[in-house]
Image (cartoon, rainbow, N blue to C red; front, side):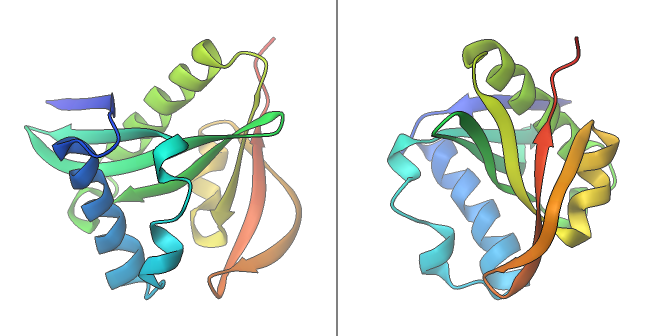
Length: 145
């Protein structure tokens, strides 16, 4: 069974979410840890997906101006391609749209993940740019009318 929920900052579940992010971004992709865990942690809404009780994916939402930014979306290697990442994104999007209806969902996606987000209704905007030495593209989610 797959379960995704919002978790409280500094709770054991939040720490499990950060561990997933570190495994994916710091260990797998060699992103410096100080870039991964930043000054915004306390002010974000954090999400954790578990499969049969085992932490599998994580992400966070951060309000930034007139947007709600989807950040630090990470799925452990063993769970990629199983629907876990899609479940995480759907739950985060449902929450963002209902809890923050006046904010535009937005993200900086690694270009290698952009096709995944496009299948979920996100649209790429602008040119490719680099964050943490990796190519990214800005993406927005346009609400269905």
